[in-house]
Image 1 (spheres, rainbow, N blue to C red):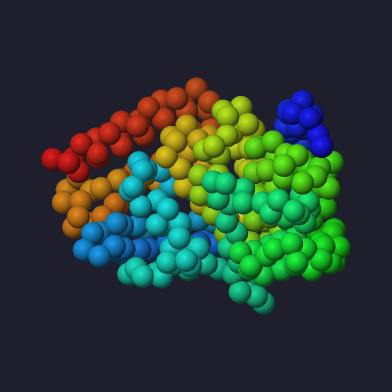
Image 2: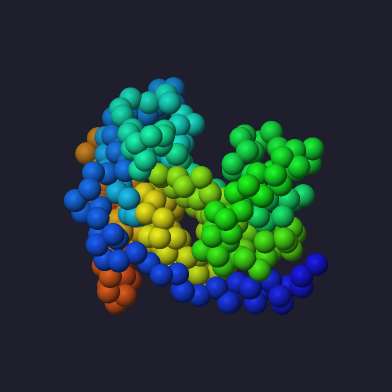
Length: 295
């Protein structure tokens, strides 16, 4: 078993060495059609409106952060995009990068949700064998066979998330940041067209969180995945996203009538000196709409 010092060192050795695509490829979403189109007119739970008039697009290689206070419908929106909730009015389109197959969606949750009896690379291969919720120790052999067949792809992902030296480790031997990197690699192993991040950094300390934010930007650019991050942290949203969509109850209608709507669509500055002001502005926007919703 690896010591805490070894686990910490593994996290600290993570550095920005991935060669990103050229400017032409990273900026291709300026002219290419969007990978994801979201247009939800209304989502209700019983008589309560949760979402209303939510519209945005996400291009390949682009990261959109959906920001809002707890209970504003962020996770509900993510479930709708993932296809886990289809009881809403509107339209969601996901366009596959490869026209010869159906679109693929990858999800990274707040908790890594790793299988404790599988190694790092076997946990990544888990996404290739069907429904992970039906996996147990008896299916480990199938996962190992799948891992062997897909080894080149998995090896490339292990390198991308700086875990090639931990490929044979069990989850109990990993730090929190390392475990979440396994979850990111697992979500990418099927080459998803859209990657959904459900507050995946919220349980991590601030230094690990910022390292993973940098890593997520790198792998998203490298794999040209359209990414949607759900978060309640303005700092995280500004650091990670190309655009920040702020959800709040409309100030012009009763909150139960419209549900949460997009109250701001912000494109964070690349200048670090401006980021603090952008975070403060987002907080002020959320505070204003929260007050308006309770009048």
